Length: 544
Image (cartoon, rainbow, N blue to C red; front, side, top):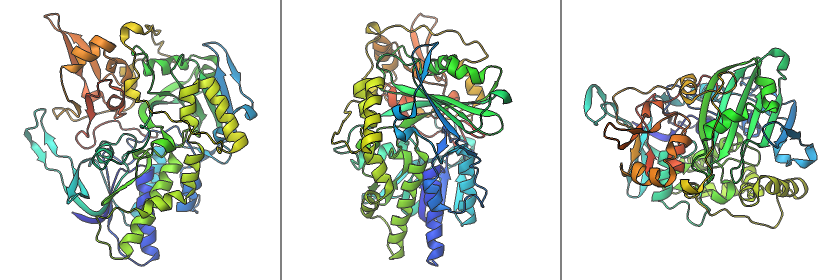
């Protein structure tokens, strides 16, 4: 099938690109064929975000979004920011002691899954074709140019043989292809390497973000209240922070983000999150409530210093595939959307001249540098590196001064040239961590949590978690690091079992995978590669 533009991923950046392309086509009375492929079973099924949405990019795309019924129903009414000293105590920080990037006046607490479903409706109304359940598995290259993508085969067994239900993938060819896969997209990762897009850039840095939705006691609910926390339960060189957002219908969204440059191989991000919910500042809202959903997803948080070149011959990479999140705001949706708008404008300008595709649209870089997106990312370039180098307390103090007094224009450039996966200490040199058993009221185990993510994969299909060397998990990772995959995975995918002969065996429960990509990022041997499973596989988030 041939199109003018193929977009990989129906997230905020991909759908914004699609909508803007069709708007421009209508304004200029031109025909344009645009399609979006999405690996989830439906649009929104794989979308997980906090989320407090800054509507700046949405205002540009659809100024009349309120009249169109966009699901932005809960305006932020207040910000509470706590430093949690320990498991019992926490200090509420005054506004002047918090970077102004953390303030949320004019923003909305939303389900980005539902926002993306709404964006998909707008896109289809404009004439975009959207194909959910079709993962883009490979890039089509010809003469050093991107020419489209190939969707994954359906109906292969575990050994790769064709079953009765076999259906081959499709070639979706395009003049230009937009990659909007989200954080650590497997095609984006390949493109960055193939075209050397990250030359002279700091390595990308990541976090893992957890989210649960709770129905809580109406008397404890304060619609529009945004709560953020730093400090406990994260200790030592482990950085990150928690959040609790009071959404509509007596629901709260609660979660924890943990930077993936932590050094202790015994640390379990999932169990740190479960611990956090027992802190009185968090538990006061959750006690007596009911957990109704769970999920986790990696976050690209390197910011400006880690942004790769976002174009290559025949293609553009947008949103979290590139790492456009502004982590100083803990927000990436408005920046992802803006990158999509810039991509659409650049691509349309080329197609309007009769361009047959395949070019490296270097004009995108100029448009980016002249946009508020560039200014926002540049002015917060030091936020993450300062936290990594100076720690939560002193890094936070520097960022408060830099953002509140100097607008991000202090003449310093902090860089973090370390690799997240390279930071683990040897297990024998690290402190053992004993996590309390879940109480089934505020804290839970991994398997019951995965159940709430509605994760499902067709049985008897090739494993989508590829090991470059199947011996490394036992001979290297277990020997040196107590095989941390057992702990950093938030879904219980990886286990080390003992055979009848007394040997150790590495087990991959790929059916549990919630597509967070943490293993692809944190494996100390870089031995695991995440690729797309069969279409519709993975979580089915209703409103995350």
